Image (tube, rainbow, N blue to C red; front, top):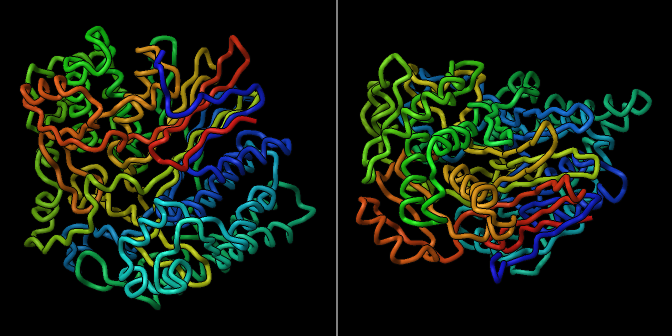
Length: 599
């Protein structure tokens, strides 16, 4: 046991929640205390996070979600990812001089998925009404919530953008022309009024039953005044983006009205006596499983936690899995991602055999029988331009790329009956799209993750889900609940969460020790974010990793970039201890405001 952890592991027999903000976690506890279950708690937290963490997620964004139903004894994925506009095509990009989909503005906006996801979960597995789970957020929007340091810092970092390029954002967050001070109250009455309109739609369906009311609230967002306000704003207020041009939005009423959050089967892998569940290849979720599949073919833990041998093996396995992501992952409704082959024991052994004594500097997708696709071995921008037949445009630095790792959050919930939820909200954040006047939130920019080469998976097509970095995890044992966890972090999510999982399962650390431990992550592969840069053999390491270990990694060819002692890996998670009848939870202190709370 470690002599010190940043926080205790919280424990309860009644319920535990985690989230990226302590007030959000308290809202989840309120739902449990009022008799709600884990799905009610998660839905309430999911709505609340979009208000309280506007630099990290928004109700105009997305939220891939996993649910374990205790009644059914089954795990489900909810496709919390909106599709691209019908009008947004590769040919449109060619004709309009777009060689990289920008990471800001309206072009990369997909249909917002948050309301559809949480109403789907609430209707199918919850017990409460939409109004019940939304009321705490309405109260905070109307009465105000205190500004915390990371929100202040994000707002203060680009005053000109928020007050001049996105003046509707400034109307909410810069009422006196400057970023609000830490501890001051921010109110977002338009956001509260928007939620009230959904509650009113639910109320008007009174008498038709709980589920019909929830569906009416959802329809008000996607088919009613909210959708109409979104579409009017993005048509009437073109905004300049990273392409250097001003664009209107391409979303249509039909795009909004015809989308729904599908309930799907997760992708799963056996790991010892555990079953690990992820969303499918419309996220990078299978990456976690591919890394596990490779690692379990060898005795990777024998050399000791965070030893040079262990970290080298782990980093190289991650690089192989990420190369396969670039070659094969995409929306399974459009792209044939060979998940079974990628997770097979034979393939994992073949990939493990490719890990050498020194760091590879190449992007090495696996050969699944048809040869290695050439598009997956060159840069995204070069591949796009070759496919489009266009010359390179200026790449405008948005300060994103692999550094774009804070703009996401996470939540987990588990109740006494064994219901379990993990969700990773993101997108629709401040800074990349203006707040929609009258609604209090911006749209997302997830479409930037599409490629513009039609031959490859994850290529832009109408009404397709972009492959997201967002990736919650659920774990079961013998069909019963075991763990729920996740983290913000873009491309690093499946690296930080895997280290947390291995720390807990293979190295015997408790939850808090496991997420407090120092992390590394690779940026060897193309970023999912504009401008899609890659840095071969580079590893970002927290400076708490021992100097001797880092020097040995350098000797093996890894390019080490040191970051702060506690800079990366804001993991949070929950575990059910069946032998004790106790739920345990923990949250990283690196986020400062994220908390695990017990009922």
